[in-house]
Amino acid sequence: MTTEPRAIRVALPNKGRLSEQSLALFEQAGLKAAFRADRALVASLGGEFEAIFVRAGDVPEYIADGAAEIGVTGADLVAESGRDIEEVLDLGFGRCRLAIAVKDEARVERASDLPAGTRVATSFPAIARRYFERIGTEIQVAPVGGAAEIAPHLGVADVIVDLVSTGSTLRVNGLREVETIMWSTARLVASPAALADTRTRTAIDELSNALESVIRAQEKRYLMTNVPKARLEEVRTVIPGLSGPTIVEVLDSGDWVAAHAVVDADRVYQTISQLKELGAEGILVTRIERLMP
Image 1 (cartoon, rainbow, N blue to C red):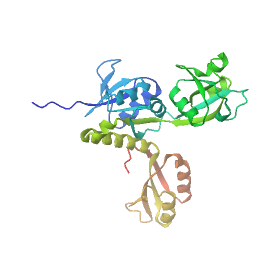
Image 2: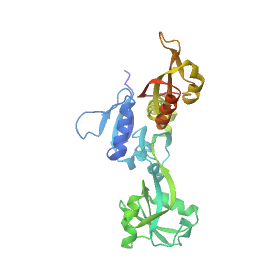
Image 3: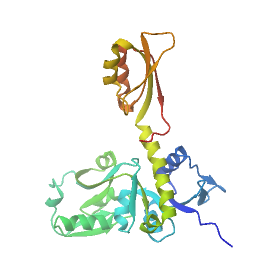
Image 4: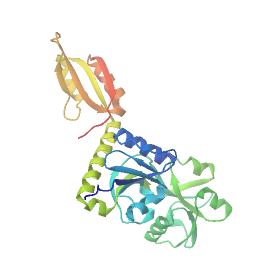
């Protein structure tokens, strides 16, 4: 009697923006989480995949220990864990940086200015130690679970190593950034054992391709417009598309053709203006759900 292979487990963050954005991305890729009950820690993602919901910081441990084959967490948390897992895809969201910050009045311009024995408050002790070892400065680490910004004002530490998005939290707390240790975004990561298994690797590649197609589409728009045939060569320079615009004859309109192209989302305004200067009419721009190369 043969048994069905176990579902491929995907470890996802259980709360916060990372969780919300992960679930939204998976749903857009066609893998909507189906929970059995409110607050359930397991959900079907359809097909071969099953989601388990854990703390973002625990995702590397679950994957490295074989409790999940693949997962989503921040690059900073992967680096802090030191576990043997592999990055499959940069998901792009949750962008921030891990930075060194000091009090505004401190006479420090860079990390190398800090004297030996400096106390560093951080919830990333492994990364902090590795970084200061690399620049040759001996430090004392004061591990904190959160709100590291208060530590220098309480005398707990001289500086902090913490995540920064806009820097506003540092400024409000009288701190300034002196150096960036690393940039971080959400990553799709997997265990080497899962990637070495043919069935699992195939499923992971298919999942990665589906997610990447959604991410790629977010940066693009599909544009359609009618343009004068006489200006077609100029139109090609404005909307080159992925491999040149698609040109279609317009019925009963010999002097006009329809041009279809994929364009950069952040240049739509300029593109429309340029097309109008060339006499384009009936310009339509729509979102794209997925885009495969």
